[in-house]
Image (cartoon, rainbow, N blue to C red; front, side, top):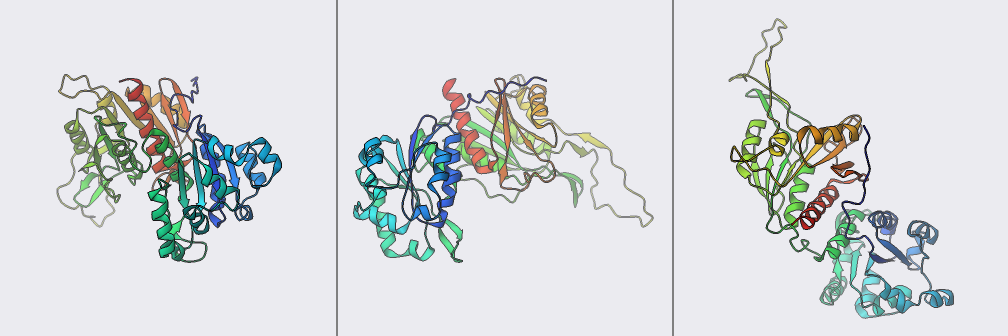
Length: 424
């Protein structure tokens, strides 16, 4: 089968934007290499401004190789001043991102100091500034730092993080720099017009339906047939659609995942219950079938616990095929009262020939998009925090890198918003 790859149908809000990345001196500076790669992957341009302390953790050569731009360091470099003065440098970008924003760097920003190229550029800029604080937990909680945070926020400086967790110093608590995926998401939200919150309701007025988790098909009251699904991806998608303003219903099989904020959750166990809940949630503008629905169920489940007979006799089961929820939603014609969602998205969990099988599944089911992913042993997809998907549409195949399931969800939600904005 011939597959045409079209990478341009879902465009990041970072495309064509310029980011001045100010790298402070902290162990988290190493994350900036990954951050640069992710920004550029989405079409953004990055110029790096490296502090003297930052250069102790990452090299100018590494940054230059990844940004494909000159790395700026010295306030008094005549070459830099001739080619890109510090005033022009601070104003040529669409946004300044300080990562890691150390306690020292934030204190200088709050005090309005201009003792090096980084602080001079930050003081001279007339563009928005986003910071990613990173420091020891005690430094973060210190009243002096908190006063500086309050001052900077009052001036309109946006902050992403810090996260809570283990630190290089051996302590635990808030102070870890936000991960590159979170920073990229914050940048994309900023350029979408809603820094720090939902992206100003790009899906406002739209209804979304998401299925998530496994289904349990009873053998008897204590045993069941199921698929390996944690529900992490489906729950993240529901949360991301709600974050963009969509009125979202999540139909979830049994899972330990917490309910996403702002989402109506309907809990079910079996495939028959999931289908009924989905039909009850219609009409919807978009349906995302991320649940791992068991293909078969026991035709006549036992009403009481089945016992061994002590003779080694194995029980015999007649299996019945479960309803195909993705196909049912994709092929709904309104005659039964169920209106087809304008955009139906499914998942293709494959162990081999991932893209080819995904393309064939989209045609077979009649859905609009398929997210095909590799769930073979060793892939780490089931129960893991990361995923690598190929988004398949009528226009072709868009390969996404291996990213967190949260980022997959946010990226998909933006693609859904793009779709409806292009087709009101």
